[in-house]
Image (tube, rainbow, N blue to C red; front, side, top):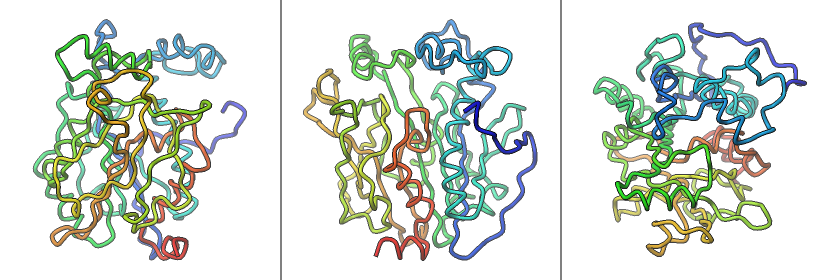
Length: 346
């Protein structure tokens, strides 16, 4: 990255609204965390916190041992890891910006400067696809206020809108320490503690909008010859063409299972299932499961003309690698519902 000349970057500036353009979607990312709460966590705490950048460097050595990542040039605490997440979505932002003609706006619930931005008309007025990245630790007690829920409800009445909910994993929710250790050994990521529970904010939205899904566990996808095993795709249900020419997403060691809490197969369609690594035990596979739900689509309903989609936020990052197949998914997602997407699907 150090050899690539980046565009001029701005910070702590007011958002410039994007004008509506027929046939071009305007995408916005909303990080649900309180940046100060997450970065101010006591690093002596073992659970429910992000790693420090120093821990990242130690575990992934020598990946971050070049000058651009040292203390002169990059943050070394938890805030450094949060910035890695921000940097990791740049590739997606570039791809989406190219195909839509609009820059992807990025918001945080509480940002580095301490400004709180709930989801309201300031975000929704110039957004067609709202991507809610649920990386707030449950312990931080983030949750959507009634005013936010009402604002999103009104926004979803606008035809063509899409609310993407991305609650992250829920590792180690059991009080059984042996089960927590089993989960840890299953995913094998030294940077994830025995208990790391995410997604209170996205869960509050799922409850408010009757989304029959709960994020469970952190499951490791199966691999063959070092490559992630292809998705099981239900193409008959993929009416939006989201998975056209898509084979896999990217590999991530601990992805959530989006468990359905209803038998109503008309309201929520499981578009993709990911085979699980069965070589390392896990309570979910011990119960007989071999795949987890990784992408769910809720078509427009009578009181909700907009779409609801559930897929993990790491699928939009490059922290864990990227593939041509993943880029195709990004393009399909950015174009969903537009005339260009329909033409491509046909």
